[in-house]
Image (cartoon, rainbow, N blue to C red; front, side, top):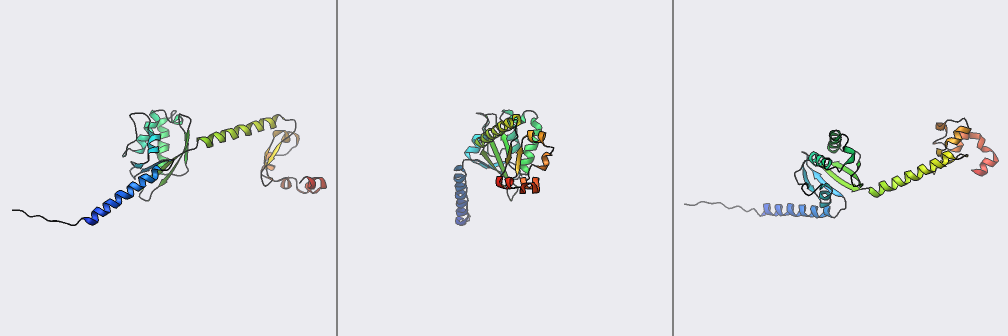
Length: 215
């Protein structure tokens, strides 16, 4: 003989379709951002990422990132392929510190790749113990920082070889820089001047008319 049963699974199928649609919308959304985006679950395996993240993590033709890869294995692969110059001196120490920061995220991690590009990695914990990772390229920012530091160093070099003394003040007229020549001429401690205004430093001496006019 024959016996069978039938069940209405319309609601189940509708929910499955909603989940599929929601996931598809999420994937399309993270594909539109310029940063590398990845999501790791509480066991530190990759469960979601965009193509930009895959491109960043693709070390060579045979080592592309796959869903299910552990974060530590991805980091070790990057080091083996020479993508992280800072890790070459002590790879194991670098891996330990990087994985620890990944599992307990705090301040963003900034590092330079072997091709000279700089990235800032921002990581946040999810409510279920996973980690969201965002890679942002900051090469231009680092380049501008280096140019600014070089300019400041040139200013300091000129200041130190000058027969006169030079100083800088911030927007509140507090001393931020005073060349060494000043302290060679006057017996004043540097910490007594830096961070203070001229009025705080000189007191009533600035009540003279010529100082008031200068101010």
